[in-house]
Length: 203
Image 1 (cartoon, rainbow, N blue to C red):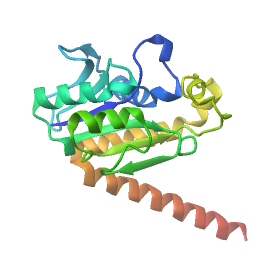
Image 2 (image 1 turned 120 degrees about the vertical axis):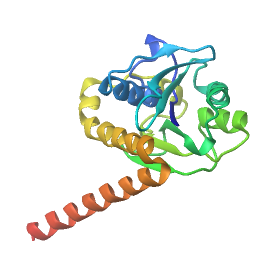
Image 3 (image 1 turned 90 degrees about the horizontal axis):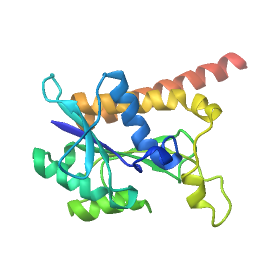
Image 4 (image 1 turned 180 degrees about the horizontal axis):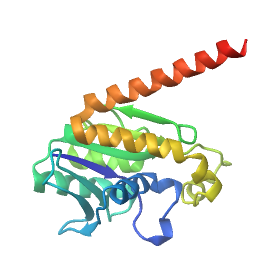
């Protein structure tokens, strides 16, 4: 079984904000597979199924971003899931809007949610999908920036990026980290080839 945990803040107040990219991606996945999130006995909502070829669960902590690790630990212990089978989906200020990076393990990169997960799991050996939200804000305005809602125009521009991120999560669910990494590499190579082809035709 594999699990995907999205980092975000619960409640309508935070829907569609940059800090809730993790929740947004999980909501899109749940909608695609006609799944509904339901409360657990722990500090998270979850959706998913154990009755398909690749059983999985989607997890949305109710603890707010800074305490995301509590939900991660509760879930992994209850379902006996290894940390390597937990994919964490998070926003990233250090990446431009819509840019996606994958990490197999490592530090928190300055993200409080990732820091909490590392702390509570006592391990940094879990994969992450980092979705860029940019950093176009003035000094001292980071909090208001990450808690600001995306505009409809921004969401339309990010549509393809969200779809790519969803395909990566689907590959993780179906085949684990290596399959997700291979899919990422294939798409990146295709984009590079298309760019080179365009440049040659333009000459």
